[in-house]
Image (cartoon, rainbow, N blue to C red):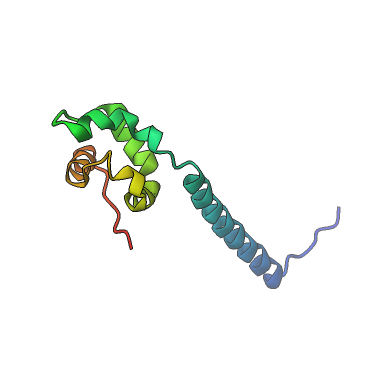
Length: 103
């Protein structure tokens, strides 16, 4: 059986390809996250947001899952009637979910 020598440039090309594929997959995952934004997923949190009731485990998990969507929700004028920002922030803090800075 013949053995082929792998040149340093061949190894470099492979390493670069691995990095490129990893970066592409990371950016695709962000697109997929954005595509899954649904305010309905926060329905388990509405009682905690509208009253002083502690958030449920389901609420906290959904908040974590929907975190990439927060800025879009905050910009949506339709959401203002349903969410008290101060109380929503308290619920997120209670769940250990940091509120992103939105620009």
